[in-house]
Length: 114
Image 1: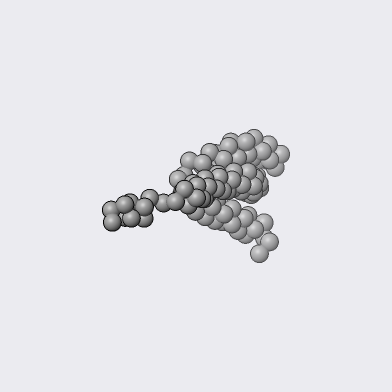
Image 2: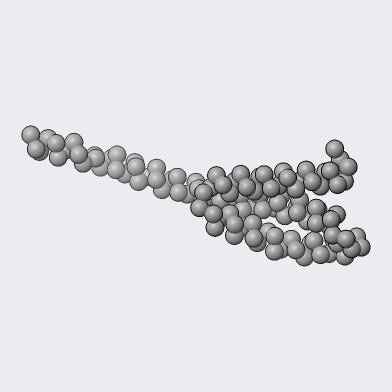
């Protein structure tokens, strides 16, 4: 009877390999998702931030654009680091997408698009 219970307790080798494959696939999918939000989300976040910063900075238009374009390198790098620093993937997606939407909304209010 104990031999029968021991056989039931240990998973079959096929299920063990399948479980390992699923865990590895989930990890790789999470890393791919983080890269996607870092690259694509970082691009859109930086583009909206640069647009908003060039409108808000109280200097001449040329200086505001040069300042915001120079700051874009720092902004993009910080978004990339942020996307891998935060442990929760859902928090990263929500925070980046909501901040893009909020900045775009403020930009549209300032420019009179709404």
